[in-house]
Image (cartoon, rainbow, N blue to C red; front, side, top):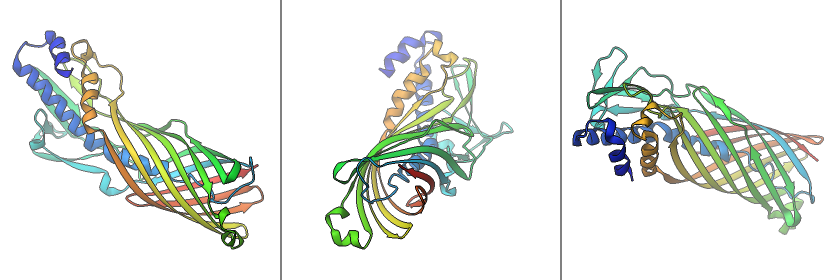
Length: 332
């Protein structure tokens, strides 16, 4: 399919094998750079979406409703803010610094990193291409609010849902939404209930969408239509939680296992070069090569305090990353 697109769209290029080779090498380099740039951010998105699903493992009365406003705070680790690129890795591009000098290597930001002044340069036929290496969000923490609600059902089951609007980041945006089903198990062990120990399990599904400004381009063909890249993550989560209650305070510990499917695509505006060759479509086809599935094992600890029908809860999730969550809840 990609080869057909190149052949059909090549009428405005010189009809040479060299042209096809240059375009192919450009697409390969862009795919390689995409993976290194956005993967740390999509890995982090899983942690952000995994926290705060269960407010309490307690069994609630039938049709009890809880509504909550949550604020999630993700701490951006230094190790995932940059990566090294070398000319030897590229088959089309060469690395250039802010002064226009060619260099053999550079440290550039991931989507979680800061700013950079490096460029990637190349040429198709006699037409130069200059790509500004993308910057990151340049934030120590990523904060986003969301709403969450639950309703208790029969036999100790409870349905949970969460939703965030599209949150604007410095150079992109983030959104998460999903639903889950919790079941209380301590109801089957009266000795645990007498000691105010609660145990429950939860299965949840969430969708995380995270987008970033990507490769700004300078070409004689105009914009290439690769100025925004989006990671789409579908996550299934299994969580086991246990809590102990002392009067109005409840302490909960959780073990979280999730599996996430990662997909990537370019979502920027259509570039002028699309009149010649469908670059965005071809790159999106090539990005399928870096789709992946990952497992995560996360620990979480939280404390919840009751003020009449209002509860305040803080949680800390830890593993590869550290994520915190603050929730204010109202029980009907």
